[in-house]
Length: 406
View (spheres, rainbow, N blue to C red):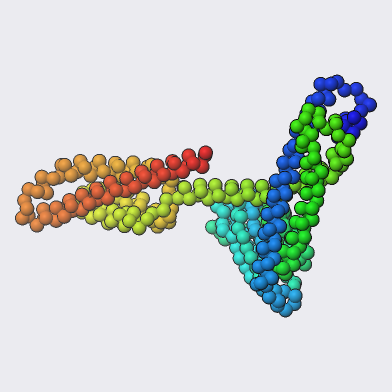
């Protein structure tokens, strides 16, 4: 019973009621079952990692070729820029459109610009060929503004500090600036050796966790019996609480690392989906219809003071000048109402002017007005098509927003 009290974390010399003992015992059994499940799942992950490492090593042995200075054709530096946090360039305007610029051994690459955010999620992968054994990886976070790019800060990492390290996922504080970014860095000088190291590490972990799992699994059957642990004398594996705790911490840290990376990716996917949802992309037919609408609206000014159509044409022209893929989500409903209002105006005008245009078929002036009348009818049909298209876009946006909320 002394060992039972010890694994329960209780002092056998202190008084304890039967209810307190039962509660502590049941709680310990539940925790032990959770430990077994976690270790079993982690063993599955390690087995999969071992398989990937073995396959990677086989492919590397077939494709890797030695170069000079101890490098190979597979000597590469891999960087994943995951996310940034609390970026601040100290500017007065407060505009924040961050992107990352990387340079290594004379080569430069940069990420996409993330608009209007101090906590961007990039999740972009970069690859640099290692051309020599010496070099510095420079990573600078910049702010794209109307007045030019302004630096949030930079990070310099020496290649020698990366050679003997495993895959590294960590936060890095920006020098000469505020904020930090999270990155994953893998330096591979020799791909065969890299996979061999991964294989050795995985096999070591597998051996360690298989032993723990085998030691703890013998208690599964005992836990099916009420207070079954009391009837066994072999409680030594359960008494090695430090070993179990360290193993659990290793599992939790590895899973937390993956969870954070996947969470960033998921957040970035949602941001991208929101961005795409809020952006209207004019197809070629819509562009053609709008251009015809603009031209027709100016022609109708020859016959009538059509300020509503003129105003509508100016709005559409401004949208085209700014960006054919412009985000006009908040202007979508007013645009539909404006086009609808102009349709009512056109319809009333058609009714009131019909007989005046059809009165004298031989009059040259009437013929010109009749052409303008036909143009107005074409204008009317185009507007009906545009309203139908814009309403369908609006419904699509509504459904997309509901999907994101779900």
